[in-house]
Structures are given as C-alpha cells and as structure tokens.
Length: 192
Image (cartoon, rainbow, N blue to C red; front, side, top):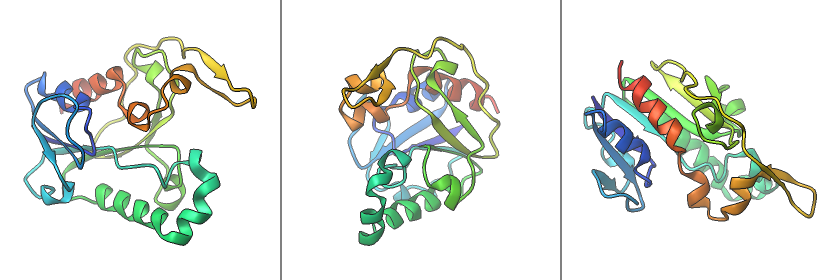
C-alpha cells in the first residue's frame, strides 16, 4: 500500500509500515528525526499523489483542551480557526482510508466525536495519554498488550499528571507516537 504519514517527523509510524513492506512516506514541515522517505514541506503539495491511506497527526496546539485557558486569545487572533481549518482539510483529504490523531480537544464538538480514544497502555507502553482517532474506512484499533498505566506525578500545585509527561518538557517529545501504537497501526491497518 502507498501510505502518507502526515505531520510526522519522528518516522515511527512510517517505519512501522515500511517494516511490513509498504511504501510509506512521512511528511512534515520539519526534517525527519530518523532517516527514511520524508517529504519536508506542506502536506497539501503531495496530497493528490495517489495515496491508499493517510495517517495524520495535525498540530493540536490551538485545539487541545489542555490549553483551554488560552482559547479566548487564540480565537481572537485567528490561531484557533487556522487549527480548525487545517484539521478539516486533513480529514476531508481525497484519500480512501484516513486516520486523524489528536488529543482530547474542541474537534469532538466542532466536527464530531472521535471514533475511538486509545491509550499507550493498551498497546504495551506503560503510559497514560488519551489519544483520539477519527477514522474513514478503517476499523478501530484492537488493544494488543494491556499493561499498567505507569506512574503519576503530583506537582507542587496539586496537579496530577503521568510521570513520563512531567519528565519531558519538550512538546516534540510529548507529541511523538508511542511504539506500541505505531506497531498496532501498521499491523492492523496494513493488512486491509
């Protein structure tokens, strides 16, 4: 299958599909972290290149409920609408099978509820991170290896968060797909 992994610079999902023999290409405005087929630029430059499937990770900065305290400012200056418009362009791309990933956010209300909410601990990674999937012509992911949710950290202000999340301050690290989820996507969706 010819697969576009959009808004991915880590190469994890791309490489999981390539390991199974698929023609998978990642695409992002940033360079890839792992050498491999990668288009650095606007995904819409290559959106009509005959893809069989797209797995997309559009930016969530202006959409995720974790940043709700900034929503009024983001609505006022147009950043939130830009995020919404980008998400909708991605979900409506002319590709037969699509999975769009984002954290819990406003698209559940503005577009529709996600088809599925998954967690890394459902796929062998001891971590909690609610991840929404909106699917087009793809089945729900079936958990492959349910493990413990991992440890939690309570900040001095009393906020509870997953320990892995508190240790990684970089948004780049926090947004990278967990290995178990990448493998499940490749194994389950690559066999359609």
